[in-house]
Image (tube, rainbow, N blue to C red; front, side, top):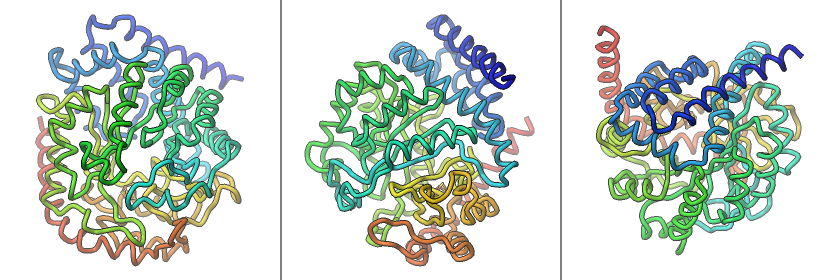
Length: 463
Ligand code: SF4
């Protein structure tokens, strides 16, 4: 009872902050945004490194700066109920209340409790992209509505209020996803989607529930994108973005960068196109050679990865760059202290219910159909992750597979986790073997960049 009263009072306090920001819209965006970041820092505690908040505060403190312009545009162009719901679910329920609960639960159960769970509602996909396994799985594997609902119910007990749908194509199950959004209004829902199933009706549904944000996958301009994803995909994505923008919805992109497309997807022209379409953020994912047939040719060489390191920082810098928030999953380890998998910040559940440490690491020894969520989080592989993190003091070498391939092999052997690849089980020796040369070549460049970062941090701390 007392807990419920505290929850209601806290929630009200957060609502007052966001209502005041929305009411004062256009009057002092810079001050409002800094206030929002200060509050986020109090809420999220040490989930993010202090430098991440400083970076954001710097970005928003200049009233004429590009991030203030970004904030103004965001507040003017996004539906206020959607904006408020994102703040309340991601900021309050997941970031503040949920984080606090999850820290207590982590102590109680002696394991990592994630901040967000990624799960595949289905292996099915409506497209047939070159090299993607989803088309071959067909409609074979699904988590039922009841499975998904049960994961969320169990997750909320542990303080987890953020859920990201992956796949397959998650929007093949859009009716069920909307039902979940409706039922769990205290959770934030996201999806990585090919975008082709976003239509007028779905946009209306998204507006009604308010707590669903899609990230649309795209790999470059029409020719490059459709070369892999099939003719007509680019046009469909552009159409989906237009619909989302017209409906004042919040959305972003999810981009896998490779040795072939890294320059295109970070070019001024490409980012200008995304911004004009209403894209607010973009996730960049380093290509991972996962799967028995995965090519190593698409891996970036050290010069290419260094280019990404500098370019993404340039894009989101507080002067210059672009009015879009860019996050590089592999090169931004310094803001989250390295690897976030194994339940430290997140985990992944595949469409047959195997609970995996990371969306790229398909090994497990726990399934949601046989064990409770907390038992799955206590599985030996997740404990090995917790004991091993950070896998490297250099946060530009965060991964136990890509940059430290010996570490994943050690963990798999020690814990007896097995391959959960649904199509063609891959041994960890085969997977990690593809990364050995890459890791060796990247190490000196990563060390050079990391030394510079440490020097800059020391200089800033001495100021
Ligand atoms: S396992 Fe590798 S890819 Fe997954 S979160 Fe950790 S560092 Fe990133």
